[in-house]
Amino acid sequence: SPFIAKNDLNIRIKRIKEFLGEGNKIKIRIRFSGRELGKKDFGYKIVDQVLTELGDLANKEGEPKFMGKELFLILSPNKNSAQKNKEKKEKNETKNENPQTSGQKS
Image (cartoon, rainbow, N blue to C red; front, side):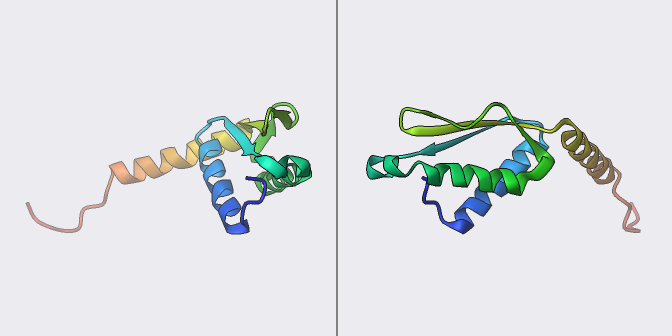
């Protein structure tokens, strides 16, 4: 919805960051209904907020555009940030695979 609450938008942005960190593409879809179609600029403002929050984590694939009653935008992960996140995950996985013994005798 183009009139999403600020906290709800922040939660969506957090999830977008997680997906981009895993190397996935994101499709942002803002659905308009009824009289909301007369206020399309609110949808573009939400897209701008999302893009400013993401910073250099994502690249736009084209410009936001309307298809019917929905505003669409596809984001792809920035290769540099995706590689950094993969390296962090690998380091965490290796730490988890080699747990330190707690001194218990077998």
